[in-house]
Amino acid sequence: MAKQIMPFFTIGMNLPFLRNIENLKGKRVILRLDLNVSIKDGYVFEDFRIKKIIPTLEYLTSKGAKTVIIAHLDKKEGKSLEPVARYLFPFFPKLRFLPDLYSNEAKEEWKNLPEGGLILFENIRNWKGEEENNPVFAEYLASFGECYVNDAFSVSHRNHASIVGVTEFLPSYLGPLFEEEIKNLSKAFDPSHPFLFILGGAKFETKIPLLEKFLPLADKVFVGGAIANDFFKAQGNFVGDSLVSETNIDLSKFLSNEKIILPVDCRTQHKGFRYTKKPSEISVGEKIWDAGEKTAKNISKLIKEASFIVWNGPLGNIEVGAKEGTIEFAKMIASSNATSIVGGGDTITALEKTEYFNKFTFVSSGGGAMLDFLANETLPGIEAIKKQKHPPKIPKPASKKSWLKKIFS
View 1 (cartoon, one colour):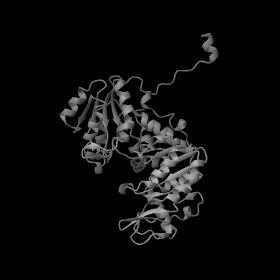
View 2 (spheres, rainbow, N blue to C red):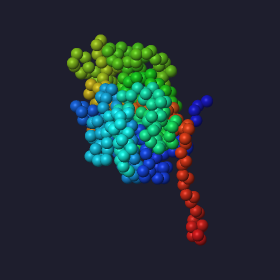
View 3 (cartoon, rainbow, N blue to C red):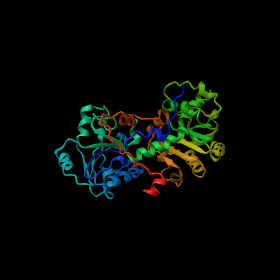
View 4 (cartoon, rainbow, N blue to C red):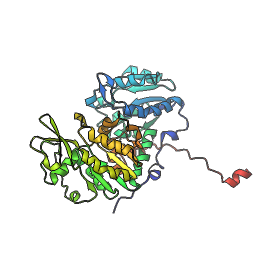
């Protein structure tokens, strides 16, 4: 039996959100954010995720909350969130950055935190209890607040202490950015048609659930990026040194599906020279790096006709600067009349500084979280809020009088 699709008004109606807290003045709030941004030479290089959470911080400070921010940074970006603190300080002069969760300074600053004040703790993943979801560590984190707010959608597919564990000890809520993600991504579960699903990037084994989920829902599914190489290989084509999945994946059930569209040409590189070739023309030592111009031309008609488009994952190897195909697709989608939802870390990296970035209907802050939510219609971070031991009381909206009672009251 197919899984029953649950639209946002059903998913969200039983979830507590930050806006449901009636009085935040003086309240100690633990706020989980995703501040995992690119940092170069000690400075924030890409600020998309920071910009997305600034309204949440403004809301909490304006309401007089005493906010403790918990966030992480991937190892490839470094170990310290200090550059992020420097970025935020001009917006929030009351912000304090504390490098040690357990120091006397941290406890003293927390004790004297003023209303509207903010504390940003150091990279939470510097403590091993975070990724282990250690209950002792989670309880210690919880000791800094009276309630917990998760506004880190993009990391809520992780079973970590600051995502799942803290909800065991405090009344817990989802933040406005999280609410926005649920509301927009849930549109894909009951889409308008024609519906075009675009799937790119790498790590095909993580994206098979999406293909299985959306092939029945979508009118067409375009497969690009490195995962298209797996299809080329399954078709019997030689793919040279192109990136393919390390595990053997049986694609036989997908190859004959008429809904799936693959690139008809590819931008490649071999010994420092670049070419555009058909997938069947790849030679020894050659690498497929991006989708070609004919592919973009072929897909343009589907984009123009589409009413709804979901796109996750770039069409080229962003790490080596292969952005052409991704930008060509972005240009077409941005100029279409379709409702467009775009996400994925590398996709954002490729498009953030282009003129098309702000023309999509919605840009998700999630990469893996977006994939997991679309595939499963929930995340560990959502389930933890739903099943928390100390569920907060959500104020019921004031009853509305009928127009007749209003006249005679």
